[in-house]
Length: 540
Image (cartoon, rainbow, N blue to C red; front, top):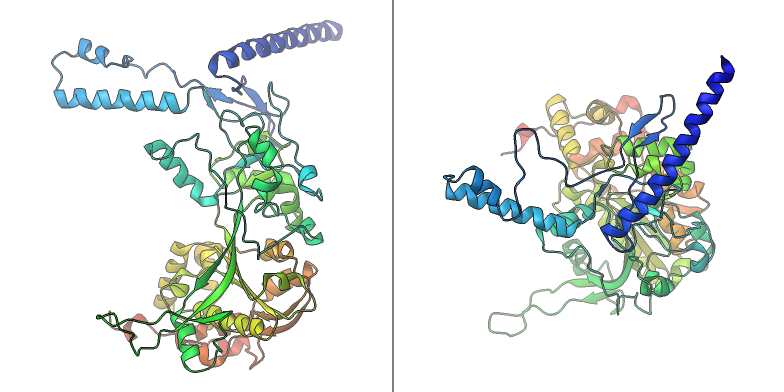
């Protein structure tokens, strides 16, 4: 009986192998018909999920699917509609015509079948080689994530450029305001010659973005000329910034106008065009870089001490299955997540950033729109940021360099909606420092999701090897930076006179939880005495 079963199984396997070969040949013919050099589609495949039986997952479906039951397909001219309902309302007929036009536009934009996912070893799949830890650009290879016709078979990355803004790009394509096949010209977009960020040993530690991202048009020019859609993920430029708080500091004579880092603003003019006696304030000369996220998944997983499989599954599940290839393409190791970017601001000579003989002052700041932009006084974010900028300027003026890194991690990466819900809870439940973190945990389930393990990557990309002054009280940021191999010689907490009264709740709670302070130590018994103002204390 066992012999018969074995023979039957062997026959089945032989039949399956024959069908696979036939399917591959048929698929190749379909690919040739669909579009030149394009088509990746496969029959249903079994997606192995740990601890579960294999589940068949269809990888593609036809956009020319039969209509729902009870409906007849319409011709592109809408004749079917008029034949079926000759007395239909003319407005409805117009809507049907518009619908046909939309369908025709969709067919032109996406002429082939919908591709839900791809698989390693699939017919026509040849990812561009990518060795993340290689020392040179040629050995490393470019990051290719485009799904355009010329690139989709060669992709070696999952996701899309521009982080969270990729969604707006999709909307622009759908609306017809952006050509899906648009290829940008990068002529004259390279970094200013005065700002050179070149390969250094620290780049081997960068796992959360592409360290070659600002050099893409130069180091991968041949690949781009050959037709690969490769995009920069970092841009570097020079600019001036102006803040009213910095104007006030300069007016008080606490910041020197040197004409290099601190520059007097253009005179204010009277209505008649004459020069006003009003103080024009100052501007700060900066070098700055915008950096988009590009994750090397094995490195990111290792940084958080979890398996790559677990990281992939969590990303897949908690984005609503947005990126199936996180599961089906274990051979692709790079993911461009739809999250916010970071911006680096350098005060002083950028070359000094990697020079250990120069004094360096650093502030790593996580976004707080309510305070940074609109001046909310429930937290210390803006006054601490302004204080750090002033310290960076002073460091540059005495021959060193200052660096501010601004991360888009609103509300401790919990988001602004969650943050405002927490504000409501705090103000209704008695806003005391002993309840500060608990209020967040009740709503978000966790008090902080910034997870600073990836944060030091930008410091290593800049070539920073030691930090003389760190303007931060955060124990998490300090531990992450020092743990990554960069020593910190001195830490600054925020001066008492810059702490708004209503933000005392936040500061005391953080100090009691382990944040750095050079002043009074806060005990858990002290926390209940620190209370913020209620809604009723302010006129609305």
